Length: 207
Ligand code: ZN
Image (cartoon, rainbow, N blue to C red; front, side, top):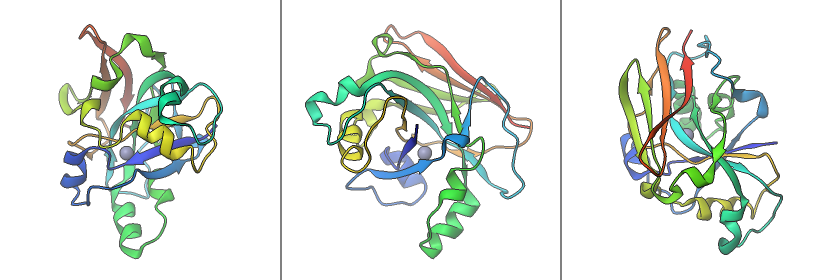
């Protein structure tokens, strides 16, 4: 399986990092070894002094396909989850400044927190609300209606380049409010069902 990630998919977040709003989805990948499952703690690595959280809705792909046409794209979403795209912002900034690939800043071990997956029928995918709570305080609150590129846009675009395979994950970008983590922080990801009920999706303690 592979982990495909979309960068700068919410205007407010692109602006907070002084990045231009992209005209096409900005795509990068993480290795499968980046996954952090089952509410395991995240051990702060020593190579960075500025690891940022980015809460993101994650699509689990349920079938294989290339060059997926927009009208069929929704059929590729098997389930949804919530995750964190941990980012070593200091390393990423250095690499970006040099025009180098930023993999080590994005794909390190534990950088892809992932919740269990839930049936898509439980959620309004076009207006899905989600939150990241840090030490009891909401630090990010997103709604998929604010995405620059919809789930359909993402699946259509990405599948032109990478064959989608059953079990692949797509991190669909983060809303505004990203920030650094410190050892001792407690993070919780929350999804809102289509009935407006809160569903705790994951917890992640920083150690
Ligand atoms: Zn991200």
